[in-house]
Image (tube, rainbow, N blue to C red; front, top):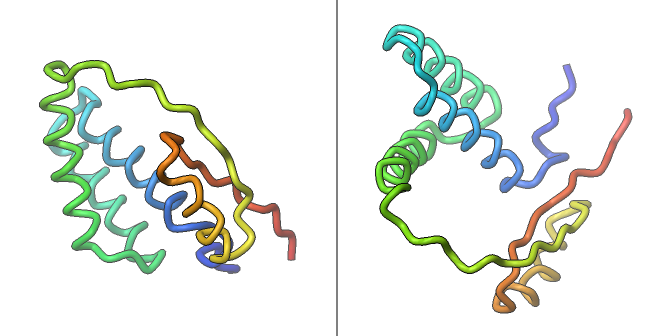
Length: 113
């Protein structure tokens, strides 16, 4: 089985885990089902070489964020700019945009091998 780890930027992998963890936090399911989902998330992280410690930290941050989501003010809307991820050299380019009040997103390249 071909590994996809090297074809996707870390931020893209991280956003997938944010989605998975938010789903577990916000779904109205039993505690047993939540535990099964959490075990699946940990297994996926481990199989993709991500630190389980960082996944636990991410979960804690997202729990805190969801607890305070209704008490926060609406933030200033930012424009978004998308880059196609070819290699880690793209980070040199995005550093130019960091201080321009822009959200930066990545698009993976389609690689068929």
